[in-house]
Image 1: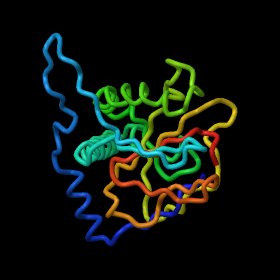
Image 2: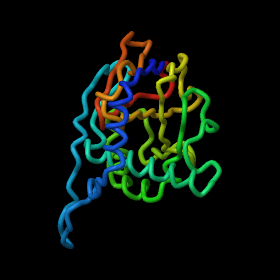
Image 3: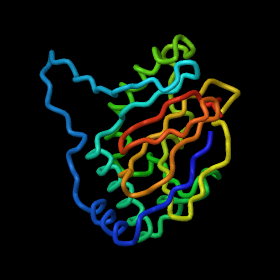
Image 4: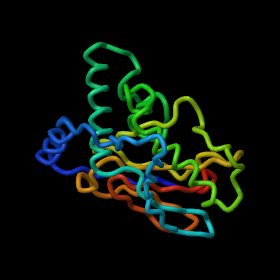
Length: 212
C-alpha cells in the first residue's frame, strides 16, 4: 500500500483555507439530550465494500463540520505550543518515518473525548465486517500514540509500498479531514486490487494492516 503524492492549490486558495480553519466551528459533535430511557442514536457510517475478497471497505466517519472542528482544534493546539515553546506538543516529524508531520490526538485538548462516542460505535461495527477474523471485544488502539493526525505540505511525495503490521491482525483506518478541493493527487494505492482509492472529506478507508 502506498500513499500517493499530494499537490496543493495556489497561495490564495491556501490562505482561504487558513481563514476557514481559524473560524469558530463549535458544536459539530454536540448530541441531543437524552432521557433516562432514551436510546443513543446510532450513527450511519455509510459503509461500502470496495473488495470483499481482501476485506477493503469505505465509509463516512465524520461530517464536514466535524472535520473542520477537528482541524481547528489541532491547528490551535499547534500554534499555542509554538507560542509557549512546548517541545513535541505540536506538529513533529519524529513519531513516524513514512509521512511528513504528525500530532498525537491525545495531546490536543478535548479531541479524544470529543470523538470517543464515534470510535466506540465504530469498534462495535467493525467485527461483522471481517467475518469472524477478529476476536470479539479485542479491538483497541494499537498504542498510546494512536490515533494520530498526519499533515502534508506541497513537498510531500507520498510513501513507499508498505504494510502496517503483518505479525498480528491489525485494522488500518485512514480518514481524510481536509477539504478534498484543497489538493490534487493523493489517495491510497493498494497492490492487491491494483487501484488507488480517493476519499472525500470525512470519509474513511478500512482494511487489515497486512495488506500492501
